[in-house]
Length: 342
Ligand code: KG4
Ligand code: ZN
Image 1 (cartoon, rainbow, N blue to C red):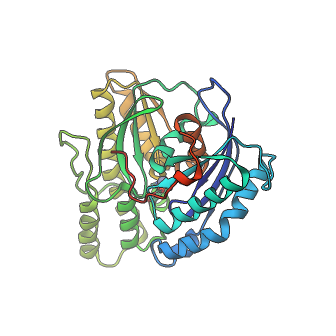
Image 2: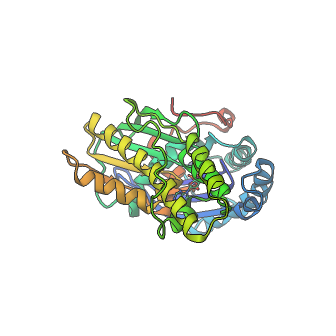
Image 3: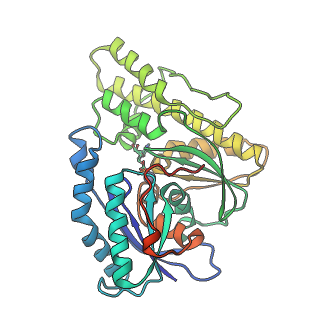
């Protein structure tokens, strides 16, 4: 089965073709093309939805054509089985570019659409062939940690997802991006904070919000205020101070993510932990989680996609569509910016 994935929920425009052989636990990526308008948003320190959607209108057809071409297919009549499409959550203008394009192609090609929740798409980046060296055992706890979301869910089987908890305010990536703005770092700041933190020390010991709460919820908005207070106190900052602030904020976020994820894995006797979303690209998060797992009583295996499948891409959408999706006629597909797990 060949699935074309389309992803346009935020500033990226992605298209990918994946192959799913019957009975196989993973999909093979034949192409994965992502075009981003990030350089335009870097100037403004955040995404301007209108600008993102306008750029996506320009990119969408060339990106789909390239993804089909790299998979040996053509735009006029590709031999695919269905189109897997992100229909939410996300920015409405951006979602509409993907949804309306997919509906038109569905009509022209006479192929059905598999609507995919973007968050569930992130999880299924873990079911891409080259990413998964060992079998994922169920129940598997999954941390979805991105610029828009921080959620803990459990997969009892491949197609059964239960929400355990999530952020009450800012997402982890959003908190890093806001701190990045305070430190004059380019948007989005997560990867830059990781890079600078390598030369820094956690000397500020920022608060670890909700770390010992009895639930699986998160709260990261207070972190930005704590950093702001410190930045005002410091005044003029040299490079080492910025590095120390980066390490301190990254450590605070990671400590909470690691402790809660492990707590969920123990509570549900999960043998697998799956990481997903843009912040999952962070190597310190992976290192600290692995370290915590080593000293845990019961055996757990950590799975994490390579960074290119952590940040927004269409291969993860095609992967989700081929495992859990329902094929529908294009008339039943609508963008839903408010879509969530619950
Ligand atoms: O999943 P994603 O591409 O888009 C959303 O669905 O939100 O995630 C983007 C987020 C941004 O907040 C970005 O700063 C963060 O992921 N991010 C990182 C890293 N790479 C991207 N955060 C920490 N470390 C990284 N290496
Ligand atoms: Zn995302």
